[in-house]
Length: 492
Image (cartoon, rainbow, N blue to C red; front, side, top):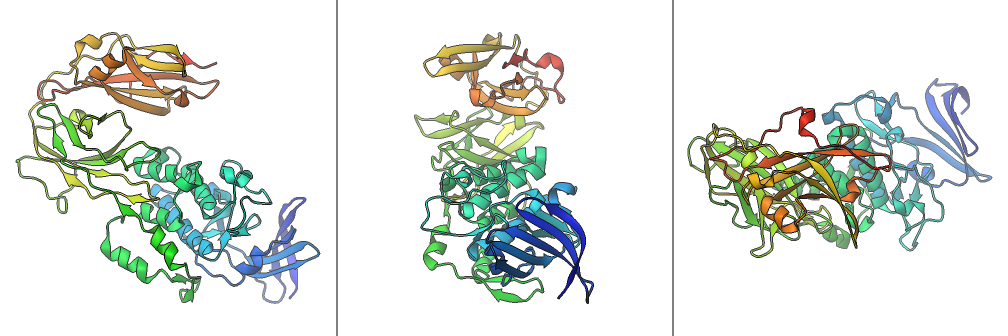
């Protein structure tokens, strides 16, 4: 066949990419001429997946690879506006094609928005396999270092061999870029953190695990059965089925996640508005426990049916500061979530790491009768100031306020830090008793969050009541007015 160039799309010392037209059929294609032997393209000729670019021809001659692939009418993900729902859908499609490629022994090694086309049919196509390679289980590091800075993990720069988890890291970075500020939502943040852990052993092992996390079907028995039935097949572009390279049975067994033990005896601590449950040390990641919770409100004291009744709100809690080591319980002040008079319940689940453990089932608490809808507010913290302490472990930063004596020992304080652009940086919650025990008059702010050398930071403090039927938490308007902020800390 003979082809006529329509236009040059890209040219560099290493490759040339052209849009060409086949003279007899007038069909358009992408033609690549690449320096070096890129044998992955030859393998791609025999592979079909609805979200994979189709390669029609690939030849290697004189240390040059020539590729002819389909032309996709669409725009790259970095150049198209998508809704949050569309972004999640495209990420699940990316997981699907990566699971397929990894099963075929191919690591892409350059996953990023500009290598994913959002086609006119509303689905993605994964393109650009110039950096791709086959898996090499015997190697301890890659011989050729390729990838895009900001999306490639440390092992891609020669620290270790790249494998399926390399693409999963880049998938997480891609998700983070596309979601922008929505990436801070807990459901996305926990997935992104697991994808992009600097230690490959602490990432998801397979793209299908990421897709499962995004689907939200963690406990669906029927879904699990379907997954088993479909484990050996994948869809082609035409919709028919084609054999997928078998994954050894022992590997399948190793990928099964263990359900965490559910938190024991979730209950309210008297009239304090503090939720208590048995700590699950195996939850969370990197030694930091993590939980999901849902709060239910009812007009009568009958316990809610979680299968039929919708929760009023849900959230997450992580960190080891709330653990009572004496009786191995976790304690969270939920008084700020009580708004209307009535009976409140909470359900709690231990969060798995997605690598060894999956989330536990939710367990329901007893009832708390809230009657403080018209109660007065606690005073707002006053005299906010940064305090710095030099220790043998280096400089420590504390957010402090001057009227600590106005509160009870079980009242809590939520310190929230913002950067110079008004972006949320972190927050930390301590009880008054713990603040007094530490003898620093405030709450520590880890230096890792104040890392910008030319940054500026300030914080707010909200007092959270432990007597919700007598006092509400101190005010914290939204948006937060200037008088609620501390002075700036400038890191120059």
